[in-house]
Amino acid sequence: MRDNPVLEIAALSKTYGRRAGGVRAVQDVSLTVGAGEVYGFLGANGAGKSTTIRMLLGLISPSAGSIRLFGQDVTHGQPPRKVGSLVDGGAFYPFLTGRRNLDVLARTQSLGAGRIDALLDQVGLTGSANRKVKGYSTGMRQRLGVAAALLNDPDLVILDEPANGLDAAGIQEMRTLIRSLATEHGKTVFLSSHLLNEVQQVCDRIGIIDRGTLIREDSVAGLLQAEESLRIVATPLDKAQAALAPDWPCTIAGNALQVRAPSAAAPEILRRLVAAQVDVFTLAPHQRSLEEAFLAITSQAETGHA
Image (tube, rainbow, N blue to C red; front, side):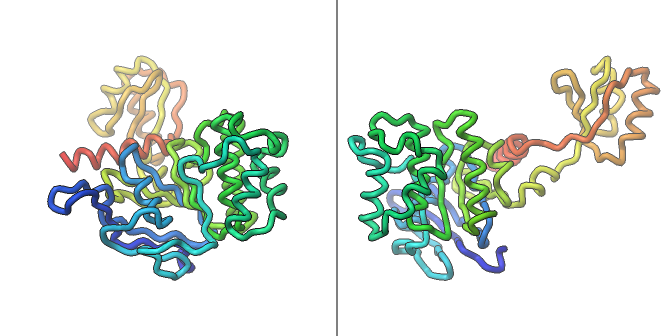
């Protein structure tokens, strides 16, 4: 997919204030997103996600580096019309209905209104289309924002926290919608979200930004499989830990023992526990979640900065 890049960022940086004493919000970020890919852009609050997205959309100018969209340099200009975006939930007229807001946006962009009904249905707002936006919940505003981002039928969709304010059912629907944009409609999605479980299920690749620097980039599978471990339910756990600790790093997590070891070591570990007179109930490979991977990677980065 990256052989046909839609988005290319090279050494992108943003400094606020005077260069000598300014705040470096983004520092030398480089990444490439291919056509049809769903790319997750992750980081803690203040890590530089929103600043990067605002530079991509031409809302603020970079201090250094370059941005290319569809092969076109847009470092200091507005992105082409085939880009749609949702940032800060979108801005709408509160005394107009959801449908009327989309109609105004379509006219502003010199677009026809033919897609509005389909988009309202796509984001689950058909039943609320004729209600004034001032009565919308946060989640409904987010849905309307996604519909607005898709008005011009863009090839690249940039979404900043699209599931913000949604309930569990709404989050699941948003996940399905985002995935379908790529798989069914051939669009490329650049997604920023703090809901790591959702990112894990919807994204192809992930970039992690910390303190303005891109510290890790990998496929979701690569991030989750980077560290093999086994989860063992046994008793007594302290005795099990003592038996294994000399050869395998292990920690007690709830009612189980987490052992950093490959699946191939399972037979030897089981023999070691039986010899130590530990009762073993289950022993299974454990794939860490994206949240666990994210915390481990950012913690390592923080230790490196210290």
